[in-house]
Length: 485
Ligand SMILES: [Zn+2]
Image (cartoon, rainbow, N blue to C red):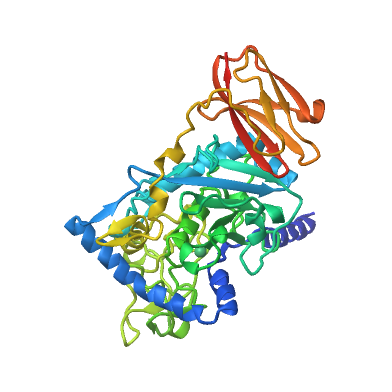
């Protein structure tokens, strides 16, 4: 009996090894694929990395002298989540209500992590406390879409297509013509696609920043649908981490990817385990790096680091609780960076619960992106210039003109029964949901029980006021504001 239990235990451990993936991010692969097409880009990327410390120093100087204008405190960046999944994954996310909850929690996580307000900062070791910085960047769900209609801040497309890495980094998911959802104006919205990376179980995010010079329609962030937002219930579906004890369920994947969107690098510099300066001889610590002078992230206040760190690093207890690898700080290879490596940085590969901060230099590079610093306007400054997109559009009366699919929702205003018609030949309706003015789902219509191309919805008994009717079609979703009288 005991023997068979042991055998069973061994089998379970093996299964765990297969089932759980260590975090990875496509930043290095995106640069590599651009270099493969345009070899001259390699030098451009190195120049960009080499310029970062100067950008950080310049920002800090201008903030000190009051010349930098930081903009997002009063004008958060409008975020649109494009959810492109199959019907089983849509169910895993908890349907429209689950997606709505995840998007809300994701925005809350971003606003905490980018503004030095994350409550798990209590876990930061004492020697790292002075490096816990605020980027001062704020985010909000977009509530007006590019056509001026209401949006809950996300749109859903149900597709059976699986997305695999291509030359433009999951480009198919970013275009309606290839089973995805088109990006919204990249100068006004931060586009985030939540998709299934069917070819890579450990890949959680891939970002294409504006500076990479690809088509604007490729600019934005793809994350694995199973890491969107922060867990609100034990039954929520999230991707499990390499330790098998944790999940990527605190919304930190998007915190990390937006770091790339604002041009900061992984703390170890994507150089396959090399130290940027020197290697300590006979190093007893974790993650022994390869000898040689590699690259790091180009910033002074993230310590020299060999390779990515995973899971939840166990601090050695030395030097006030820091985590070390073998990258040394002096010519003789005798000295460690006293504070250890940035395993707790949002730009590392540790589990969500093990990362808590951006450093001042990282924060300064990112803040530059959305600021006017001296005479230089940040690359993403325009994202902060459309605060109206965060608001629900003003009441447009009874206008219910179809914009696509022949969709018509009437009468509006309604006194009880609402009718929805559309052209089934051009599109397939997947779901109808009704939201109240604060975004809560108040009705979810079972479309399987009704006729195609014609639905009636009973609103009698609901409080009078403004509601939003959201129709999820195979080609995308449409939301209409209605007035119940
Ligand atoms: Zn990354």
